[in-house]
Image (tube, rainbow, N blue to C red; front, side, top):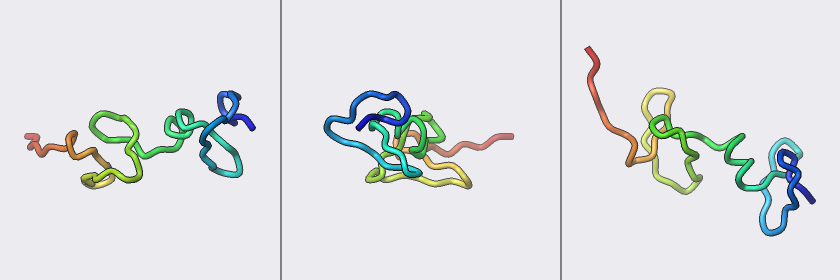
Length: 67
């Protein structure tokens, strides 16, 4: 088996999306929810803060007022 994106062999783990298999790196790059602060992937088991339509790592979220 190989990753549908990078074509590298899937040796230990794989992720499934839309009937295709992906390595962890490509799956996160293509499909993972991204933090609105740092734009890095948010793991499914992480606690997050949601504001309007954005999701943030707890450490990336802060309130500010724009005038």
